Image (tube, rainbow, N blue to C red; front, side, top):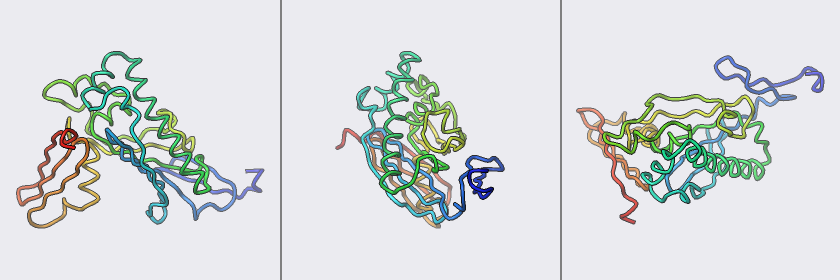
Length: 226
């Protein structure tokens, strides 16, 4: 406060102060959006005031060294607490590196990034949060949590502003993750009238059917098809 002659910008999240900056910074607010896929990770730098994407990068998921498919990574993570931490930390390190690159290229500080939103399939979601994954490898493949989560970024080792949060959209089922939820919300399939199919093709393919009976989703392994 003294260093900036009592002129500061305070960022609030649900009434909590998460960032204080010198001067008038009300015209600048940045966030990160991430699609954490099994094979690739898409990272977007977003202007939170306009909602527009400023820049983006696609990178390989470094977890591939612990298994090329979801089940292999689940099996690795469930071997021990150390293995679970190892497969989680390589992802966090790669995300931090790429976020720092995006920030530098666009002349902003990672310390001024106030929010991160992450979507992922259920296995990647659980591994990223450090949740147990054993139940995902056993029938009926039950997700440990199907609620949204807001977690301090620093608790996950994510390098954005010290008070910032990582928001995780809820997963739907064992093999239908929050990335599928994001696809439904982004396309507006849930609000369309008539019969519609939404298809998200990745290492796993999720398909949603919107009809007069409601919304139903299925998932299938599609990596081998490529």
